Length: 397
Image 1 (cartoon, rainbow, N blue to C red):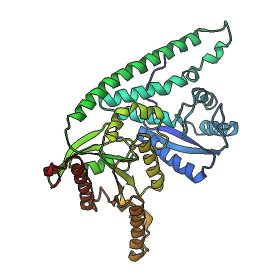
Image 2: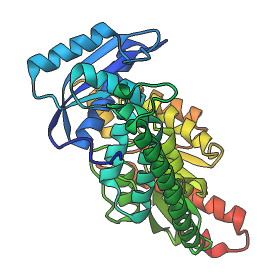
Image 3: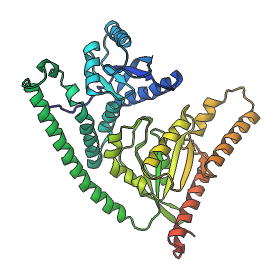
Image 4: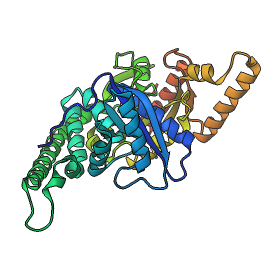
């Protein structure tokens, strides 16, 4: 039976592999591998080398070409002490098996790495069940490739050996486990739905955004509570909800799991109940790390995921966070103050236009422009109360 265990060991040396496909540029793939390196670091691995290859289509057997795989194998042989090979794209079970045969090193893909991080971060019964379900859904189509001894069994009519019988047993066990976990999640969902219903008439506001953009830090600042926040990917897995009161106007504020590029589909499906907080919110606070070199792409990834969840039309305030970091990285020390202000003004005007005036520029850590943010949220919350409860003046005055 395939057993689930921690994939990445702490302080394990890792090699990253990326393929430049289609209309992608090498610069894009470099930035994608930067993110993969951050994922690896979050999981506890240390990136020691990166390999990239330009291909029209990935190789069906080994994803990268034969020559590139031999180059990786030679590097591992020469360097020594390499415990992990991580691919930035999803691999099939047979590709993983074929790659490991050549390089002799444990090989995983981006989805497996994200699942490993999720497994280590899950704290509540709900999050643990969601992660376990996603892990089994990931394993199921890869079972055959994971059985390394299968090829020795031969094939064809009348040649089914014990390996094939075992894999059929495994498939049945995994399918039964998926069914059981779905039932368990369904029961947890009912409890969560009851809890959400009991929150009453309050307007619900949800923080959404790419992973590691500062949602939990903003949650702490706005709700004056202590929510786990650190500079790692997927620091938040479980939804945290707090009652917040601005000028006698109460509302519920939720911090949700961050989105990421190439988020495995089965993971989104498994985290349906956590994402219900987003679906059932009245207002979304879309947090963007404006200091990130790919902030526009991250913003687009989140908008695409929100559209898939059916939340694209919800009232949204876009919060451009980490303005202090943006200024420090975008401006050199010799740039005149007047020029800096012109650049910042153009940036604000551009996004004010694109968001139809629904954006605020802040720094959660430096606590800059937070009064403006609070006022913007308060105005939107009061507006929602006036629409929903036009005769309940105590909520919006």
